Image 1 (cartoon, rainbow, N blue to C red):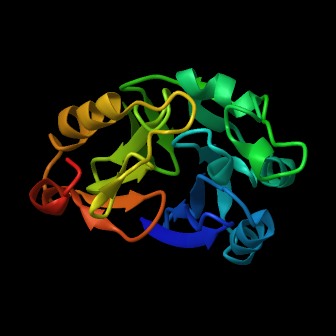
Image 2: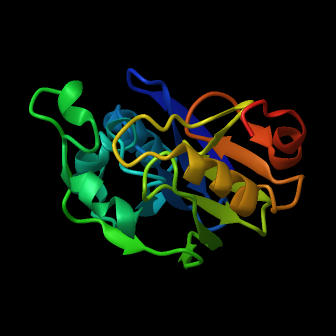
Length: 207
């Protein structure tokens, strides 16, 4: 597995291009902005994009969707409880930052525990409400990798003051869903640097 990180947009969101170096198939996670950058990378590396995965539906994680889907015509997956947010510029906070706001209508819903077989890997959906009511993480057990979105950061956690956020839910999600994973699991968050589950269990001051 090859993971490329693109830091995009005003919120410096981590967008991940995850590819299988043997099959040349790829998955894109949270394309929040700068879609042409991702399109160019996929084209230049001669990758076959299979899907787009969303960890949640805030504007800084979805802003590049339409251009990329137009270019590659692949399914977009989002947790079922964030479908309304994805379609509503007020809920996804885009109206506050983008003239007219941003919405996306055609995403496929995923549920807790569902496994998406993509690019030769199994992406397990872990439902982690708190940052939004439909936040989720994607766990690739075979690689020891977790894409945590805005649930868990390096020495921090996601904010809960936006629509549908809940601090109690966030803390429960981290403790009950993420901190039970193997300590060596490498975490790729939605913002800031990478970390590991064991390190956050020992040092994260918010949990």
